Image 1 (cartoon, rainbow over the protein chains, first blue to last red):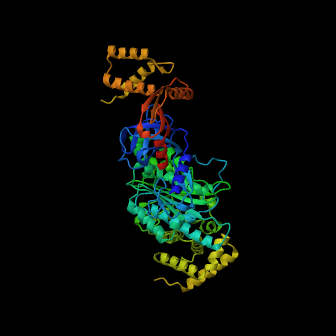
Image 2: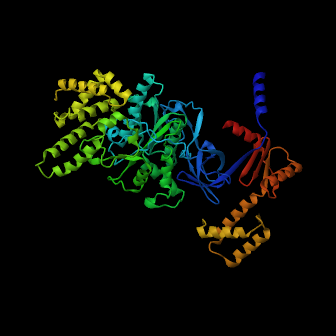
Image 3: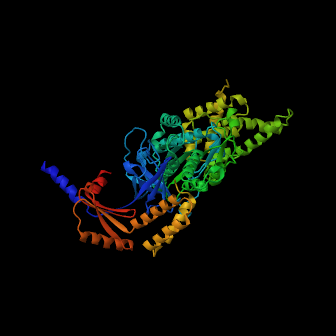
Length: 509
Length: 128
């Protein structure tokens, strides 16, 4: 018993008698998740403010006689006259590898029921993007596992590539496929024991989505065994707009930690249209002046400061961003789409028409572009897929004219035949990313006209058959392509021999 | 009735007129009240409420409210006055206010700043 008394006495002795200064204020009004506070004379912009009951808010509007705070928790317990105090800290969230495989909210708190997260470090949610000096140009590839993208619109580590399209065109699917492909590459790379291998950790930020959709994504990642390399930041539609506004920044903080610590990370913002809507809601409640489509004047800065945090740092790691924008009726000239298009280093445009024709992923080759990715593309893909974009563009142009006439010259017919085969070849089921070496092999036999004798309707089956042939019987050749990353004479002869062997056995059904 | 923008603006102007060298002057306040009575501006009650609120906040900045659980002597209050006047670079007067909920120690409030040195405050910080 005396031991217990001693412990308490020691605790009391440790208590400092020094006065602690707190800057306080009083809630004047509270509505729609926003509190107007009087006092808080020392509060900083974006500082965490402590409300009664452990609720946290962020000071967003510093006015002459009051402070506008968005509340990031349960507002039902708060009332007018409650005392609030500053914390002296900018909003920070727990970061680190301990979060991999977990689903967290905008404040980094676990929401997956798997218990607390043992994270030692925290990182500020809002941070100025890395400057010019510390950056390095994009030169390392990030494979999505989607043939149409990796061969024609390649993405590099540290790039910001927008994924834009109407609802239900497969935007999220591309992102999930990319995450699954990173996990697949990580497993192969780590198993190979290559010391220079750099795994890519993924962060999926779900903003304003239905909870059921988030669960579906989670299940897909779990089923593909990709969750162990992924963090999901969930701010569903049921969450308050403040959390939806913060979630992408929290995700960026998680990704930046990997980047600052010499690792590579991929972040998906799904989607920034809903993020802009949440920010508009907050801004309107805070009575900030509204501009076009009632968005506040700083909605461009909102997204530019977020996406500028994606970078490749000299001597450190990289953060690649895949922001998603949902368009209305294919209108890419709306306010938020044009903003984000101008910020990013390219866009992958998904078309509803292509999707409905069964061309999935419904990537519009004409409107999609990657501004920096080509320098990150590996040599073998350049060698086998360099002409694809041009061929496909020619095909689209000619296909439109060919509808009006039946008499076509041989060259036009050849272009159309080639184009329709490329279109078929790029059809890919969802959640089924293809390894870059397999992609290169398939494109190689396309360039060498192995598919020309196969009917267009059998191209998908033929490609699948060839992929299976390679993965089951030519693993050494695939490993060689992966390691060499270029088309050497030896690889080329190997591919030719494999293609001949496959062609001899393939029967179109 | 809530004050509109123009009422708040007028109250702000009147408040500025009530200060002399950054300190609320009783003479100026009397003058302002006289002006309001004479000119009867729009929404006088709302105007007076906003004006009153601003003056109260300003006065609170020059007042140290010392909450205490045990006895506090005049000497302690004078010490607090001196320390706060030095910190805020203005004359601050201290007034004592008993608060048994603090258990022991002091809590000093100057404007929106609170200096917590009470047992209740320490216990609250331990619980966080």
